[in-house]
Length: 440
Image (cartoon, rainbow, N blue to C red; front, side, top):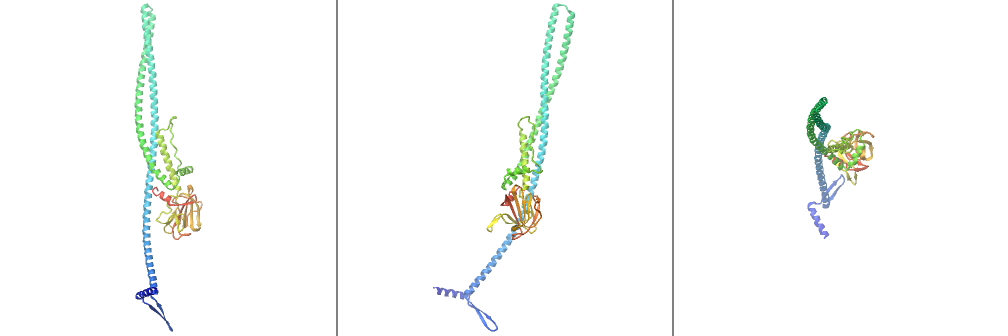
């Protein structure tokens, strides 16, 4: 069976690959090489495989080139969109901050006017009470004078009756009559003066009541205006604080610890806001005072977040167009502890947060490396640089240029290896970058 199969295969190959001889001729001798059908089949198969491999490799290279071009264009479009979004958010944030400042100024002005009106109302209430007391005193005096007048009239009548019965003492009667008339005149004058004073006090009391009513109406209007200002301030604080709070939480930071740390480390960057304090004569603070203090607490929280945002690496280290060539995680059987961003040689590299340079020089596989120590135990690393523009111990700010992109150290091409470490442990830098994407 094997012989017959071999004969059939050989005859089939002879049909398509007949035996050939290649002659090699020299000056003295002639030789030839016999190419059997099997040998020709193997050579043909190898040549076909090589051609197919060349075609497939060329197609893959072309597709990769086209895909890389499309990826670069998409990256540029995403970068422009991201920058436009950042500019729009920055403008909106400035507008909101200005609105909050204006609202705070209006609120302070309204509080001052309310304080003045409250003082005037208290003074008016005091005058009204004094007038009521004066009216009561005058009325008591008037009642006493009327009682004395009635008593004097009764005494005069009894003296007149006694004189008529006795029929004498005209001189004493004349004297008593003159004294009674003098007493009556005095009483009449006193009654007239008391009536005038009473009328004046009554008119002043009515004017005071009208003024107090007008002041109460103005205070109600001011309270409505204050309520509107409070609502605007509360809305502005909510719009400003909630995204920042969410950003820090998405970055895995404990907001309470973060704010306490920033509050303890104030260094002339605004300072905490002092709560309002009004004299309440031992009473509980008013609702407006509590509301105002709550807004001030939110403004203080916003100020603390603003300071903290500069100390945490939320920014991108590359501001121009770049390609994201490798992410955080396992790569080629080992841990890739950062993210790689590729751009042309010499592209500026910027600090992603405020901090202090703790290393600026060559380090094994990193090549030219910059390490920056930030607040909250965070450290950033910028590797494979072509040039370092800072020195060890130098304090840098977010957005400050620190070096140029290169391919030093263990690198296969021009790119930036960017790392973020918390407490010495490497974490994905995109956590911070994505957390701040919709805020800054």
